Structures are given as structure tokens and as C-alpha cells.
Image (cartoon, rainbow, N blue to C red):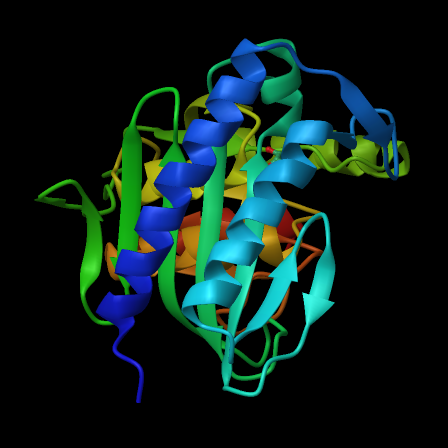
Length: 265
Ligand code: IPD
């Protein structure tokens, strides 16, 4: 049986190298290579290069594992472990020179489907701040040698974050969701990198986070950070699985109220 800490260590080493590549590529100038589903859904050459680097390092270290990446798709392995990777989460920030983006690397056991998998390891690295958030199943969530704990707001108002999916047809619904949730909020952030939103919930820098339209690579690493920091993560279903229809992450005290308002229940 693979030890989660080995996976965390490998993910951290590769995330640092990948983040350094993203940072130096950005400093050398960046061009938007493609627009995917919508105007905001962009991919840069750097996204592709960074994913190639991560994929090749993982394949060299653990050729038996599967891979699911934002830019290059899925490949099944012969082991029961799949790496779920967003090479540059926060690509719009990256393209515009906003220093808030991250390499997100998760390792999961089981089917490469969030409803079926068990997250084993999660690493989120922001090369601009140098912060590397890491978590292994049962080992807690960590920033350097500081163990992370979610915040537990006591009713004085929560600092919340959200994101907006790329499909313009969903924006009215996104704004209605924000309006429903605002009575819980002291203030609201839309910082532009889902993996960092999760990491900040884990670190207690945010009280809660909600978003519609997340993909597995947006939450595979970050969701484990939150649960290992004592928080809850779930979605539109009753279970604790982030879903594309809705993802919610917060401390346990806020979770049910935040989820219910976000869903419009
Ligand atoms: C996006 C970011 C953004 C979130 C989107 C994600 P990408 O990831 O995390 O904050 O609102 O839902 O898709 O495209 O920059 O890797």
C-alpha cells in the first residue's frame, strides 16, 4: 500500500519545479495560445509546457499510476492511483500578471471520478508567494511547519470567496447565488484561483468558499487541504463530494448554512 506521505513529497518536489517553470515563462512574456469553452477560458503555452513537465516527472517516478490533467486529458494506469493536475490554476490571473496562481497536484485512489475516489495527497504551490500548501490523508494540512486549521466564525460575519464559471449562460445564476449567500458575509472575494481559495479556507484566511462549475483538477488537491484542516467540502449532492453543479468548503460550523443558501434551499 502506498504511503500518502511519499505521494505528498513527490507532488511537492514536482510542484516546486513546475511553479518555477511557470514563473520564469511568465517573466519572459506570455501569449494566450487558445480560448477553450469561452472568452475567459484561456490556455497559454505555459499551461501546456508546465503540464508536460509534471506529467513526465510523474511518469518517470511512478509509471504505474494514472493521470488526469486539465490540458492533456486522462490516461488510466495499472495501479489504483491517479494524479489529478491543474498545471496553472488561475490562468487568467497568470495571463494578466496578477501574482495569484498555483500549481495544483492531487493524488487519488480509485476511479478517476470525484464521486468514487479517495483523495490521498494534495499540494498547492503559488510560485509568486513561495507558499506551498500540502496535505496527506490522515496527516493534516500544512504550510511549512505550521499545521493548518479552518476558521470557525462565530456569527460576526464570514469572509467568503467565490468564482464564476466560464459559461456566460451561467453568470446570472452565479450572481443570484452570491446575493443569496451575502447575508452570511462580512465581505466577498473573487480571487481567481480555486486551488488557492481552498488553501486559504484550510489556512483560516477565508471562512468559506463556494463555486459552480469546478472540474476535478480544480478541487482534487484543495479539497483534501480543507478536510485535513478540519473543514468540510461538499457540493450539490448530500455527500461530501464537490460537484460541478456546486462546490462548498468551510469550517463545520458554517458549512450547512453556506451550502443551503448557495443551493437556494
Ligand atoms: C479556474 C480558476 C478560477 C475558477 C474557475 C477555474 P483555471 O481554473 O480556478 O478561479 O473560478 O472555475 O476553472 O482555468 O485558471 O485553471
